[in-house]
Length: 415
Image 1: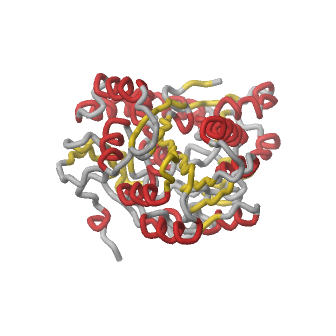
Image 2: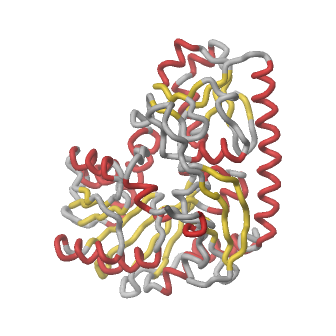
Image 3: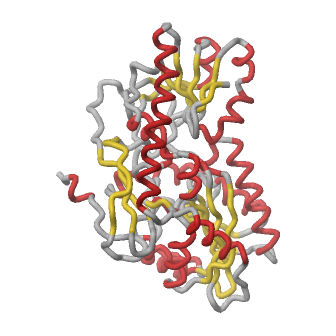
């Protein structure tokens, strides 16, 4: 059996240097996505959840890395198409990319971390040739069943060579919130370089570290997210790997993200002002200073006190409290604030893969959200806070019945 020391990361994933310092520690947490099927199951293992800052390039990454097969190839329950908001977001994304970069029918598109094929399906509707690759075996089956050709494997330079041999090069290579999950990121960049056409574009989105820090969104830190990206270290690493980073756009998906546009130096793309402006702002906000993360930790503790005060006041009165959604980040928030089955009566989920199971922290039952109308709880804590507006709209009839909704971050507030 592997020891915790076997999972410890001693070098920076972006620059391969070992000049790293502990930046923050959030506790011992189980893998958030690994739900219990039976309440009597043996307790899941818990692993250190902390971040290290690279003093050489400024990259931020997990202090411990678990095996990919443990994280993603089994028991993985995240579905891209589970929420209408994200589906619409991907549809708009595809429209934008196609308008600028798709000049003819049959343009070849590869998505890395394609999940259930939601994004690729929109490219398919635009008459593109599509291919996905994703390591989650069951979810890849869902995509293939829907007619979205998906390879159930991890993407790297080795699989890239196999794809090249069978499918050739691609005009568009894209990825959404996947590259934060990748251990050997430099090898993935090399794989993309192998498959990208001379004038093609590589467009990817990752959670944005600056948003996490400014908004106290610490629960987006979990074992599946190995890296916490900023443009400055990424641009340096991509340039070293032979890419031209020519544009960056800010988004509000997943609690704040950046969309980075890359091409090969041989392309006609010009570096845009957004690159310089974003890097300047990151440095101005001291995003690469250790003290920033020490202050961040103190802010998290303050948020936790406020949240626990609200929960305790309801519990003292014998009120019913329900958790809405079990995104992976829920495990981090529950772990950091020592929340458990004493605080919640049950959870609800819109994702069918998570329903009728038990949470990875506390073994609390998870039901379909329709049960809320039979139970009429007093307080619903929205763990899927990045979708809180759509959740409030969907369940506005509960609000009319006096049910209160609590959004925990960035500052606990009741609706």
